[in-house]
Length: 148
Image 1 (cartoon, rainbow, N blue to C red):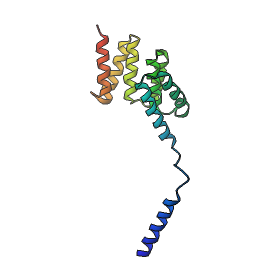
Image 2: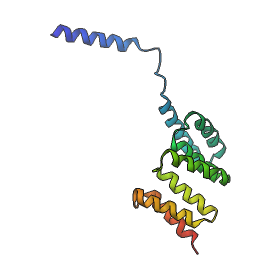
Image 3: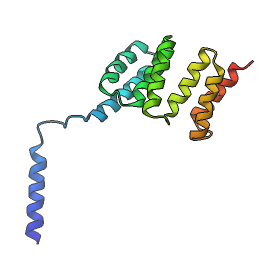
Image 4: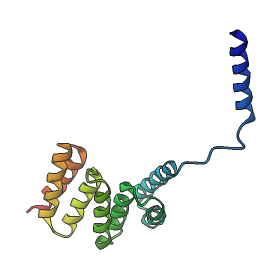
């Protein structure tokens, strides 16, 4: 029995020592996640053009990811391209109807065009989904600021 354990240990050591010719390739999901982290960094720095360039590639390669479309809407809205933002948020919500950030930011976009009713509808959805979560509270504050 000791010999079997010893042999298994040696084989494992040899397998580890042989390496694999470099790091394993990143999975598509991991690569998308890393790019979204970079997009968030660019957004925080208000580097809209660079963020949009990253998102443009992601919309092709990871078109099934709600976060890609939500960030696309956010960047479009903050860049002054409000008409582009709405379809991006809607696409995010088609992919994931429970995407809290997309509901919040869509509500904020509605406020920017003076549509308090649709913003309130997004807040109502958020309250149903998450109660008093951060996204709901942030949108509620923005709605209260928009009322006379």
